[in-house]
Amino acid sequence: MMERDRKVIGGSETKIDIRELSDRRAKFILSGVSSAFANALRRSAIAEVPTLAIDDINIYENTSVLFDEMLALRLGLIPLETDLDSYILRSECKCDGGCPQCQVSLTLSAEGPKVVYSGELKSSDPKIVPSDERIPIIKLMEGQKVYLEAIARLGKGQEHSKWQPAMCSYKNMPTISVSKCNGCGACVEVCPTGILKLEDTLKITNELDCSLCRLCEDVCESRAIHIGSDPTSFVFNLESHGSLPAEEVILRSADNIKEKIDGLKKCLKKLS
Image 1 (cartoon, rainbow, N blue to C red):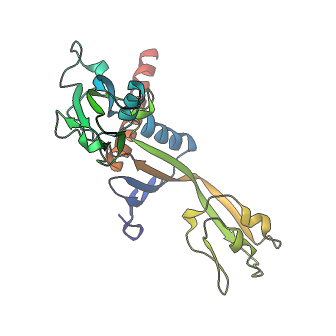
Image 2: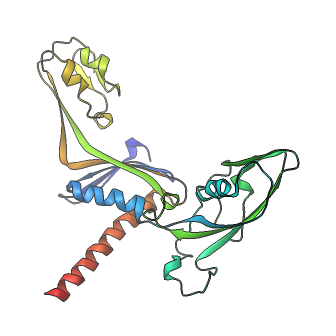
Image 3: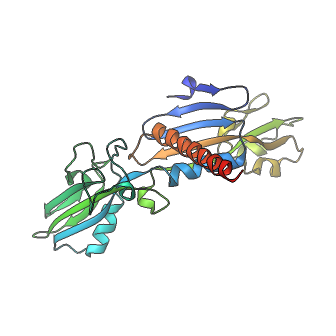
């Protein structure tokens, strides 16, 4: 979804202005909320939404230059496409030692000379595959071999970074005002994002890209430009690793917050 196709969702108090939306990226403006809620949404996106990641490895043969531990670390950081409707957390499963409901097996068998990529991992579930087939795992020389079985399980980013579904950040919505500009152009030269243009007058091309560095304020001798921010409006940027679509990460983050609020309400009712 391009910027010209953005959608605005919500009522008069809380609004979501979607500026960009694809499988891997999302950019939106969340208005009418506190900084506490904005941070809760960010933390939920990176720490509370479960994904599949390789958690246990049985290495049967490894004659490469990498130690087994280094090879295991690389495999654990490969994002796997995740189907949250088919798998549950290991802690919630009643099986003894693992089952198809809480884990999936991937095998790797390779012999050099070659560079082994993530696409060579063979999964027992066709839906659970690396999100990118061209992630390099190891370089094997002539005669070197790697043969292993990897077990992927659901987990959350609060346990380990390999289970984080995305990178998520936000900033306050910038507000830029200009008055009594003498046209010196000093602010245009120092602006790191290039959003200031001097034509007949000073113009702001894209207010959202402002980094709030305030360098333009510092160099403006006439104090014609002022940079501020809206304390109830936030610009979110989310980039998925490919385990889950960006939209699903956001929706499940919001659902997680709602579940926690409902749980808190129940606890408070019991105390009253």
